[in-house]
Image 1: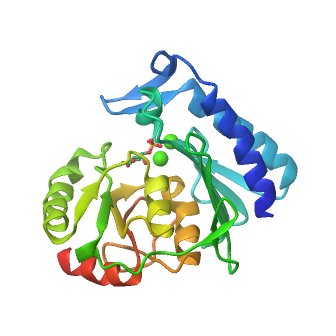
Image 2: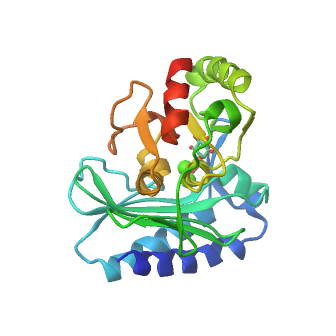
Length: 252
Ligand code: IPD
Ligand code: CA
Ligand code: CA
């Protein structure tokens, strides 16, 4: 099952790699931070069409347009380009994120960074992989590790909280990093390069695939209250290795 998703996502990655004049391909804009380009739409359309042929029984929820969160049966939750601002500026750190969910479970997840040709994948109960090699979270504590964060850029009401927490995390850890793609950040924790990722107000399509990948890699996922996250509402999320998770919660 996951191999078919990987194959399709890799094909979709070619649309991202062949893009040009990304900044002039903007089709919608909300405020000065939230953009949609024709490529976001093209990648989503390609994935809906090709995955729809391979999984005719599944429904689709995607960032660009069709996001009916009342669907709860077998469904794909898709972010066609996670890191659109990076993409527009050719910063070359954006991912395709595809999760196959059933009720509250993610049963398969794929995150693909076409610029680095890294494909992160997991099937429920079968471990997590980077380009076919098994991955696990690190054993590094946050006090000796790196923390990743998102700025919650489309929700200015979160800015003060985000930067207040970031200040504490910066003091506590080795250093902090901001990639601009939440899906990639989660995978960086899943493969042990970093210890924690946190951000307020992330949407189900940002995190659904990453949630399974990091869980299968031995990591922990929760909202800021320590509860399971929801795939039908935005979430304030933390993804971490078990030791770093405990430390992070003392900073909240
Ligand atoms: C965004 C990216 C970014 C995160 C935002 C997300 P988009 O997704 O993941 O890193 O900070 O909260 O919305 O809009 O580029 O798909
Ligand atoms: Ca996103
Ligand atoms: Ca997106």
